[in-house]
Length: 272
Picture 1 (spheres, rainbow, N blue to C red):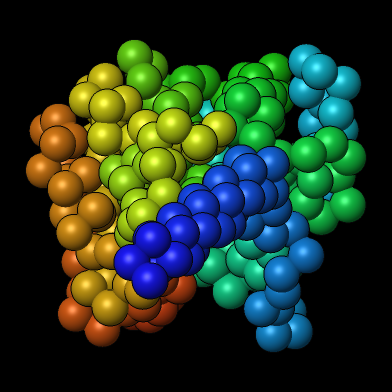
Picture 2: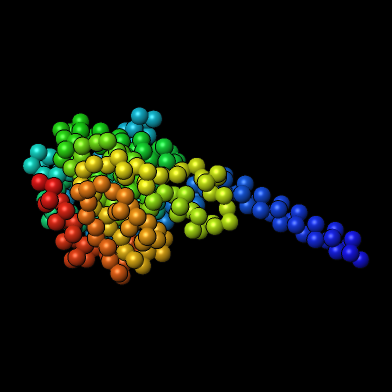
């Protein structure tokens, strides 16, 4: 009887191990589908009120990226380069871009490879190349590095932080940043060895130390996707001069209300 019980228990453990290994294999090969969501849409028919020009930006690996570009004066005003998060199209950011009209800035927002009709598949390396191509496109148009403000939203903070290392940009804005993708993945998959499986790590907490120009970090305590403590940790690690806009009520999609706009305006004006 005891031997039969042991055999059943052993079989049960073998099944658990087998299923666990299958889950690991699935997560390894399917992980980028879980991380990047180009077809997710929370677009609410917002109408863009700021004048934009649709542009095409070529990467070094021959991918053409869609961008929206608004130019007031490249010499007189700062230029914001906006790197969006892991889901949706450029239209999903209209409610943010409309507020840039009154900020006396030029801006460029690009859609990642695989997003908004762009060819290619997103990856950490690919997104770095996309972001670098956007900055180079602006430099070719006559913008100066010292007048560029890098803005990262959620996943875009990984690209923004990476490309800001050891540079002389005017400023860096991080909206709902994470410390690293490994740290974030551990929250959703606590029983998975994400450090071994994860392909796209986006190690923000190590790279923010290499940013020496002004930084603004924005995060809400109610964030259910990237925990607030990560944004706070990024602020603690960042070099001076650094500024924060932390709220009690904001979830992951921060409310572009009067207070947030005021914080953005104040930061941008401080860069002059």
